[in-house]
Image 1 (tube, rainbow, N blue to C red):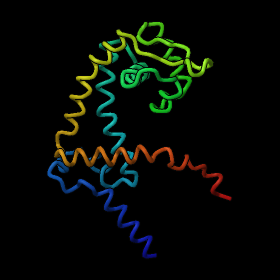
Image 2: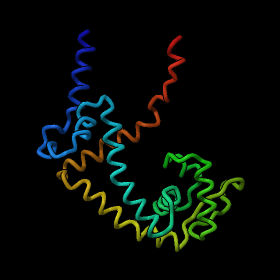
Image 3: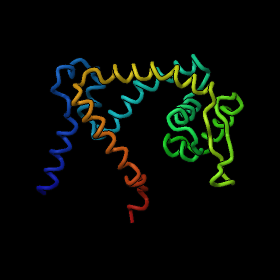
Image 4: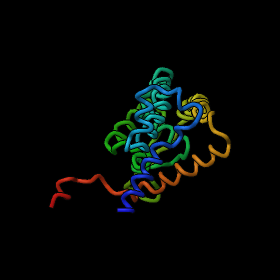
Length: 188
């Protein structure tokens, strides 16, 4: 009983995080409910922030370069670390392997990336970014960095560092998170 009460109190405290900040009163009523009365506070906050970044950035990238989000995700991955496999890009992006495979072929056809046989495993392919691909990634980087800085502008440098460290811990721990729970298995 005590443990249940303590967890319930802790969950309530987590949901209330940030509610006392001066900016808290300036949010939309429904956003306020989703922030502070939501049992799934973490997923709401992460998804809300991701959309605040992704929607305008990927809309601009599509307009500017004619690339849809999955295409740019592949290109950006190669811009960060050239010589990747399709599986590595799929695993790090959350896009299914079949989507990544289709996108890779489109980008090869546009001469934005190239595919070569992996010298370490002649049955596999490795992907490389072309000069045109590098130009696109370099051009897109400034608006992406500016958007991220704007989103973090309400934090002190120490808070920004703490947020970075905490989110990295969540990401690193995500592969060990339990898979989706099948309710039929739990009814036995």
